Image 1 (cartoon, each protein chain N blue to C red):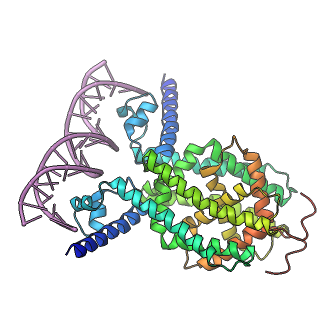
Image 2 (cartoon, chains in turn blue, orange, green, red; image 1 turned 45 degrees about the vertical axis):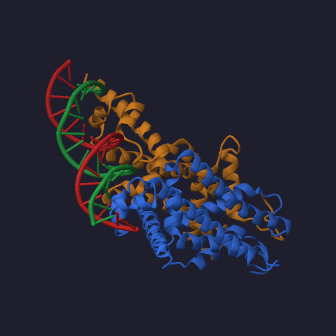
Image 3 (cartoon, helix red, strand yellow; image 1 turned 135 degrees about the horizontal axis):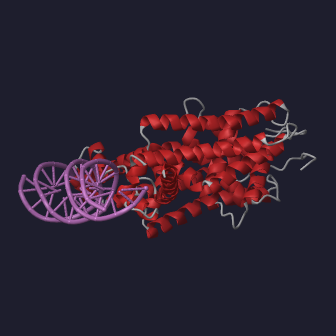
Length: 207
Length: 207
DNA sequence: GTCTATACTATGATAGAC
DNA sequence: GTCTATCATAGTATAGAC
């Protein structure tokens, strides 16, 4: 009895989270009101407050899941690689994992990006800490590339990492997976990031 | 008399536009209410409606100025170059102009990016048309690079242009011009976009 | 061109029945 | 765990004086 209700509670809470993320992404946090969220989750607005103490708590939960899912996706994708994997392959895997996470958890991740300012100071700080942790995975990856000689040693990793992030995150504004698959896009971005767009007299032999 | 009032009207309208852009960027369109805008512009909320018929019209004006200023900046920067300018120099100039426009018209451009969904369908469509026009300037630039042999002919220009846009627009999330100047950042991004981050056996001779 | 005062609507949240 | 009913507040916009 207790278990069954607890489970049902979790299911409703989860459904709320899903539809909230979807609406927050689509219309923005402030433009979405609790009655809409309730309607999309097949309940009445009063019932929301059994699961979450406030609309803000719902946003916090959405943003939390976004950054955790993204971090998890890229982290495990990299950890699953054999130790001798080339830098090019590692970069490709990280780019692919990030891109696919944007797809799979898109509602959470895009809502999260748009709504950072709506979080109260303390929660925002905590969320930014998690974002920095995620960025560190990428910095480690790039630093490893320099250590192995695959990446130019004179490069400043910080802006480069941000350039790649920008290219990656901006895909949510234009990429249509029906016209160009995630795999293909990852491939193109990996190639662009590594080799650039210039015509070089001598190209890398392998590819 | 008529002229003086007209001028004063334009000054107040312009001030309204400036503070609205600033608040829209900082707190978001929906989180900003007309009383705040009025207070920041040293007037009372009722007076706003003499200059703009609605809060939405104010947003529309902000977004309009954003995309026009950006287009103008990059377009004229490229047009001012002598015809024989190298592709590398052209790319550098375009990147620099875009980056500096984000700085100079930051309130307008960032507010514009965050608030697209808040525009009604018809205005949004028109705004997207202007954005596409801007993107075309970049596609022309890149196509010119291919024509001159500076850019690899096998590259698909569309995603590449979007990668560069992403890297460029994302700077608003992290770039602190006090720590790394716009010039230096433009230089880094140009180099990254052209040559990539890989260590190549043979590098381009000039640079 | 700007003010004051106010109409009207929508919102987040709560109380209490079931 | 969900409902109905309602409160309190905040929002955009308007009317009319100056």
